[in-house]
Image 1 (cartoon, rainbow, N blue to C red):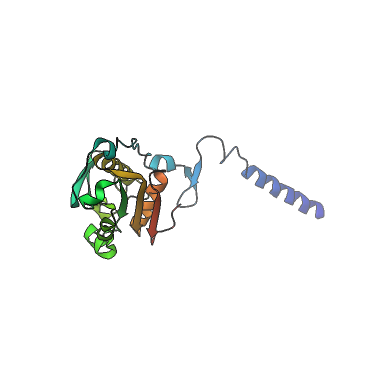
Image 2: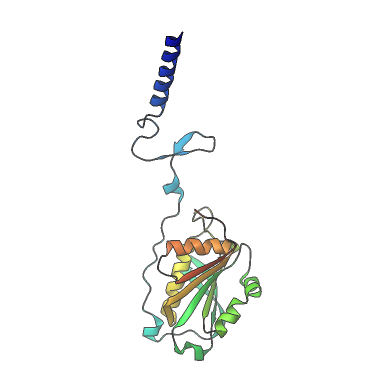
Length: 213
């Protein structure tokens, strides 16, 4: 009887070793992922993820070319990846533009208009009084593609990078004092953008963000 039990244990161990063989599920080559039902299916992360945006280097600064934008608040349109994107820009008075301006990008929450964002934060009003420019990009359908999935919408990292380049070339900005702030879904977009565009922001502030991978 003990011999029979020992043989049974050895067979179980042999079966377990075979089932864990790297030559089956863990063969070299494309990795696999666990499907919704627990079965294995081809790993599709690389295929489903949006391609890394190609944001070109910033153009010559307006500090060099002498280009400026008028003071005040304006709604502007920018062409990004074949799509017109919109943002609201607040520029301080002409007297504050003697020096290179610091810039804040502020990202709204899901379904929140830029008017509601400003009413809630007062950021553009206070920042322009302190000599900062403030740009509030507007998400497509008032949402942000912080998961970076083509199914969610256009590439908002590309939008943010293109916007930074646009403002760098059209006004005199201090490249060492560019900041980002966002609330809730806007905070998630700040985290995604700051990670995807390293070196472009001096600091970022998030309020009510989720935990992102």
